Image 1 (cartoon, rainbow, N blue to C red):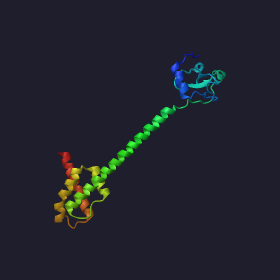
Image 2: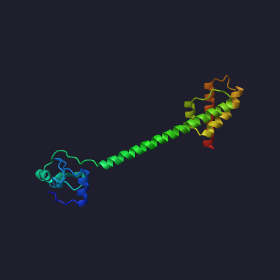
Image 3: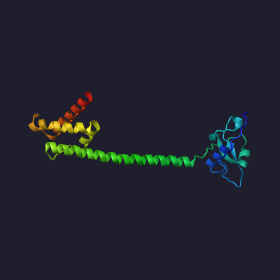
Image 4: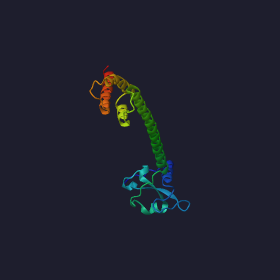
Length: 187
């Protein structure tokens, strides 16, 4: 048989507060009743004074049940902790959305910069599509992209790779950018 150790006043208050100062069996509240702590697993059955093993009960319910287990009473969750958790998650999600918007704005500026560099150097109205530019941005440094475009101009203008179509130009420039990036990483 377990030896009963008295719960501290602080622990009693915490459990009563968690349970809304309400008997978890019958729903009665002070001043209509005196509240006590009940052990979900009775001390006689090896229960302890851990907060999760304690529940608020009125004197009538607690004394009437003795060492019997009355169903699966679970301590009510701490509403303030749940609220704080939700507020924290909401704030984190809001920060994420704000960062995603800033990231998308920066990527849009980089895409525009690449397309302007292309237009300025190849003097043509057709520019790499946004997905092509984003692929380059995700793989390479901006300086390598611009250097690759500029380095490709003489070859493309001289027509050294036969008749250029736009997708052949994109493949060639992509290879030049990759070589520039690898050269910087090797050196």
